[in-house]
Amino acid sequence: MDTLLLLGYCEGRRGGTGRHVPQVSLEAEIILEDQQEETEKEILSLYHTPALLSPTVSALGVALQGQCLYWQQQQQQQQTDGGPRASPILGTEGEHRTPLKAIDLARKIRQEKRQERKDARPTAAATAAASPQEKTVSELKQFTQQLQHVHPNVLAKHLHKTMLFHNKDVVVINKPYGVPVQDGGGGTCISSVLPILAKMMDGAKGPTELQPCLGLEKEVTGALLLARSQEAVDHIVYLHRHNQIQRKYWAITVGVPVPSEGVIDIPLLEQEVAGKQHHFKMGLSPIFRLNATGEGLSRVRAHRQASSAVTKYQVLDSRAGCSLVELQPLTGVKHQIRVHLASALGCPVIGDHKYSCWSKLAPQKLPENVLGKLGLEKSKTRHLPLHLHGRQMILPGNGSQPEIIVSCPMPKHFTKMLGRLGLVFPDEKDLK
Image 1 (cartoon, rainbow, N blue to C red):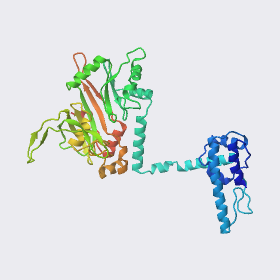
Image 2 (cartoon, rainbow, N blue to C red):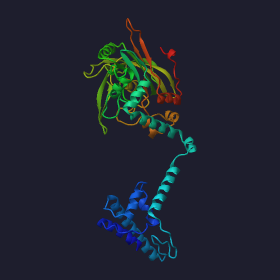
Image 3 (cartoon, helix red, strand yellow):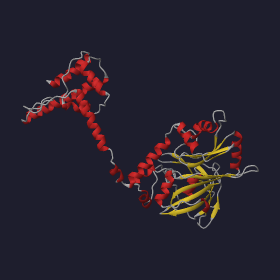
Image 4 (cartoon, one colour):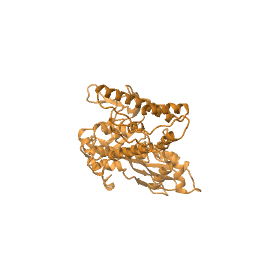
């Protein structure tokens, strides 16, 4: 009888009669398991005030109808088995159960939800006992998420605080990981906050022009050069074209380059990679190839669309199958350092998921010994950020100004990786 009254209430609400409902039984708890605290008022209003039909009331009616069918099936089954009859409000025959009010039921559900969340929350002891794999992956996820979504004012304030150098012509900032220099189709970029940064530097009445000159990729960190006027931009472009600006990068690689230092002079060409994941990559376009006997080299015609790419490199330290390499690009081709390391030397940058495998786009595969040192599972390598950093920039002097040398400190994820792999952080005085 109680079941029919509950269903009749819902049908009455459809007609707008606002028929009174007896108190809900404990077994109706399943209907409200996903309700939140603000829903309590709506539940109470359904019991005490006549109102027009709402989507919530309609959903409640459907849920109650299903609950009624469930209890009818349970009663029929128990009668068939000869067992005691059960009722939504009465327990087994002869046993009376006190019904719950709607407000008590809502409070009970909220309390159980809080207890579930409290039980699911990891304790300090559980966090301390977490495996190295879980800790490492958690740190990497948190790091990338925080840096890729920031407010423009927050980013401008951070760039101003970590500024490396500035004078009347140029500014050198420390570019963070995951923030593109130019607008890449959504999100915050360096160029969009330069007007805010300029006002922070010069005030509201000062010049507000800042332009990026020599860009960095989104995943690359380090020294980024900005010009404070169009005249300065033209001068920097001239210096860069004549190879008078020195830029040195540090990279942590999988594998040890052989020989330990040298010059890579292999043109690069954007090439199409066929397969299930059709995409384009920068690839080598060599102008020499082995003879048929394999004992000598012969020069071939260069591809018309290939760009000359020259990179100097030097291994600073190596251990456990990984290396810290200093690189100095003498040209400015797209992805030059990454392609020369991965394809020419066979030592891709850790976290370079694009060029670690040529034939497909997939997370980088690391050797077992490297995974062991990093405390990572194979399935978690996709969270590794690119470990390529713009370490130093040298601008030539002139008659009135001395040479400008700017060094950029290592980001946190880079120094942590050096520590995990046991690579020694070299002193600046030991570098040539």
